[in-house]
Image (cartoon, rainbow, N blue to C red; front, top):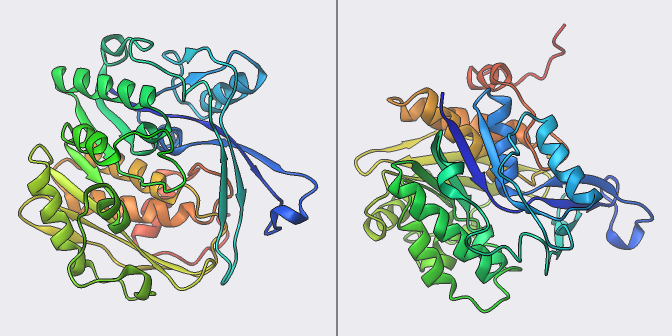
Length: 346
C-alpha cells in the first residue's frame, strides 16, 4: 500500500497533573503532539504506512519529538532540521463546568520559520497516495502557509488525494495573514474536507441554517449541518466529500459525539455516543481524521462504514491521556459493534 503523508508542527505539551490549574502546578506532565502528527500516529496504529513531515530544531527536544514519532511507527525520513526551538503549548485540563485552557508558546519555532523550498515535495510524494494538512499549519506563519500551498500544488499535480481538517484556532493567526484568502486557496485543492460549524463560519462565513451551537447541549441534530455541507461543496467544487463532527457539550467532562458525511448526493450520519467521563479531549478531531482516512482507504465504496469507524475511534480517544489516539482496529470495531461495556479483556 502506498503511504499517507501529513504535514504540520509537533509541539512539546506541558500540563499540570490531573485537573490542577496552572496556578497550582509545581510540575508538568510531558507529551509531544500536534494536529498532523496525531493523525499520523492513528494511521500507524491501523497499519497504514505514514510519514510525518515537519521542521525541527537540531537539539535534544527536537530529537525527542522525532523519536516519539518513530517509536509509534511513523516515518520521519523527510523531516527538515533547522531553527532554534520546538514549539510549546501548555494545557490546563478542565472538568465539569470549567473548560480546558491552552496557552501557546510557539512563536519563532523551527516550524514557524519554515519557508518554501525547504521540503522536496516531489521526493516526499514519490510513493504516496494521500496528503493531509490542517488549518493550524497556515495559521502559524506566512512561511508555513506558503510551504503548505507549495505542498498541495505538488500533490495535486501528482494525482494524490488531499484532505484537510479546517481546525480554526482563535489564538493563532497573529502574523497578519489574510485568513479567509489563504484558507480558501489551500482548501480549493482538497478532495476531502473536515470541519465543524465554527471552522466553516470563521474561515468562510458559512453557517448552519437556524442553529446556535452554544445552546444545543446534547441535542445536536445532524440535519442542521446539511446546509453547511452543501455550501462547502458549492464553494469548493474539487471536494468529493465534506465531513462534520457533531459535539454536544453537556459539560467539560460529558460530551456527546457523532458525525456527518456528505458526498454531494447523500448525507450519512452515525449513532450518537455519550462520553460521560472524558479523560482527555485534546486530539479528538485528529483521531476522527485518522479514523476517517483509514476508513476511506479500507472501505472505498462504503462511506457509512468509514464514518462509523472514524466516530468510534475518536470516541475512544477521549479515554486516553495525551494528544494521540493509541487504540487498535479491533478495539474500534468492538465499539462499532455496540460493545461499550469496558469489561476487562482476559
